[in-house]
Length: 97
Ligand SMILES: [Zn+2]
Image (cartoon, helix red, strand yellow):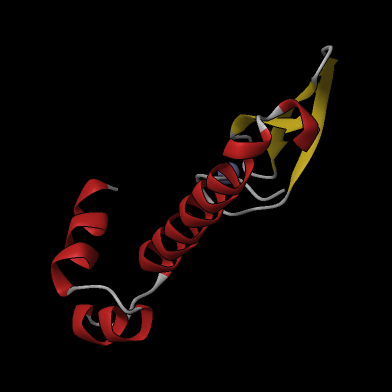
């Protein structure tokens, strides 16, 4: 799992095993710490699972796009066209970092 702040690979510092999930405390090579959670799909309501998976996929796509925008030195218009988002959205992501 890569760091949500800098994208560097991470290692697991500790693992907490809970009845329906596993939480892992992680640290990236640049010493940023974050937590990940693993769940068995069966614990999620079956009717909500598809929506949850779509939600994860959307958030993951947005997150990846954000990482690309933050690391790219390309001009706003070029980057926006490549990622299929508006120039304003690229500027908004860059302004917040
Ligand atoms: Zn990091």
